[in-house]
Length: 392
Image (cartoon, rainbow, N blue to C red; front, side, top):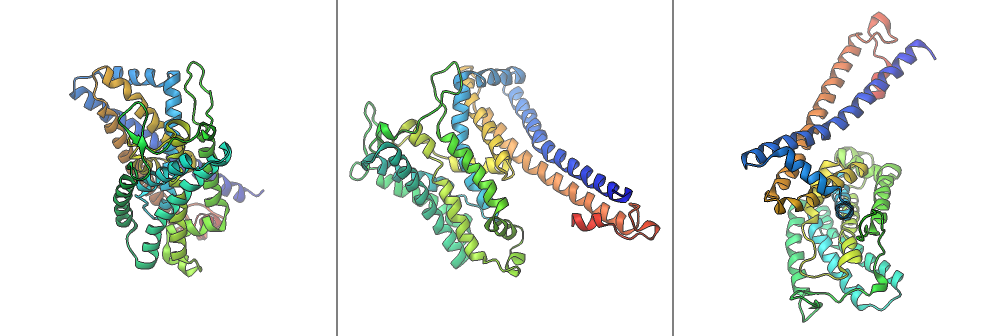
């Protein structure tokens, strides 16, 4: 290898390492900044910051708490993936909340009434959830592609409509039956043979990790493969970066909008499945709500990367679960909400600063090459090296 080529590779490797460190430093600094802000709030409210953080950490690493953290993170991860699919194409699917709740309701109703062998019924319940979520999100995609309606506006409105439709369906005249031992109502319970088996992964507790965590991991792998190893994924990312460039290269943008929303909704339809098939076994009035909005925060925190979303889901779940000890100690659990909100805002600001730093560094590098400052193969004449062509 020639000295010039060796120097070229060294410079490229150095920039890759710097980029990796910057990407890692941004969320870490954001979390540290959020901890400082939370500490200030704790001091203002008369609570010791270090003692509070230590209390949360001690409670969060207990066996039962670890299981609950993994279970919450499973649903958060699926919600984050559903949002991230839209984000990668500059589509803001804020309707994940309505999509997963309506999907869980109808899937639970089918699971409680259809007589099928257990494993087959599990498949049917999941497929119903996926189909309902996709169809509900497909309305948003269809309005966007055919009429130019903003997906933010239509998905927010469909959230409200889904809430109304769900309240109408969950009545004794239609799908609801009394829940034994309470004043609650819900769909008919799913037979025990169709319960998704859990795993006793954490010693020291009888609580099991949702078996659906395996499905969530597979969905993360499928998300990565779809976006990075398929033509569809390339077209999706290209459209998200520049719609005009995608059109010029022959991409049917309207078709991509509809397809992306259908896929996002299909994943959203699975958000309620871990809880439905692993814990509650019916859809009732106290079924978890708001997971779609949590997914937005986690997708932002994870920068739409499957591993980043997983880390964000675990962090969010850990904070949610650890907050349960605060009320018992007389500390407002809203402290955790402040910390979560600060983390999201800080991460967005940190990544924007990193992006601007990279752009400024790239501009300085190109300027040096054009003026012959890098000592490239062009010698004193200042001819730009192949490095610039590779970077661009």
